[in-house]
Length: 176
Image (cartoon, rainbow, N blue to C red; front, side, top):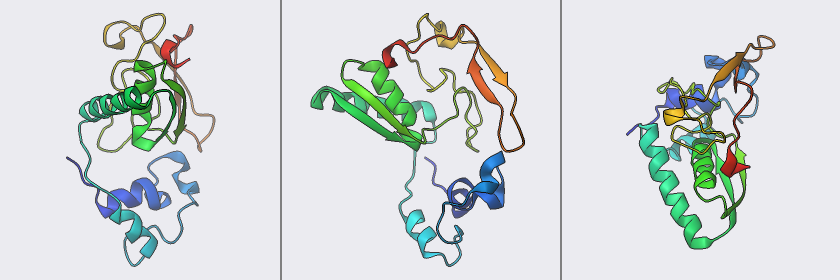
C-alpha cells in the first residue's frame, strides 16, 4: 500500500509549479490558496480526503475493473464516468462489456498512453491506455508485442513528446 505525503500531494496536485515535474506544471493556476501544507485550509481539506492505495498498478487495475464489470452486469446498460486513476478501469470495463457500456466520459484519465510518468511508477503502459489486456483489431499479439509505437517530438518547451501507435494504427474494437 502507498500513502501520499504532503510533499507528494503538493508536487502532483496542488503546487505543481513549485516542483516543475512536467513542462506545463509552471502554468498551474487552478488550485485555490497556496497549495502548500503549511497553513492552507484548502490544502488541509484536500489532504484529509486522501487514502492509501494499492501500490501495484496491475493488481489495482485488475481488481477495480473486475468490481466495476460486476456492477455493470448488475445494473445493465449505462454510461461510465471515470476520473484520474480510474481512467484505465473504465477502458477495461468498456472492453469487457461493450454491450453494456453506452459510452465513457473520462475526466483527466491516468496516462499518458504507452507510458506512465507518475513518480513511483515510471514504466510502460503495455496496452496503450491500460496496463492489462484490451482487445485490438488486428490483434496486438501476446502481451501487446505487435503494438508498435512512434514518438512525435514536442512542439515546444511547453509540451512533451507524444507516443502514438505506428501506422496503420490498430483499433480498440470493443471501445469503438
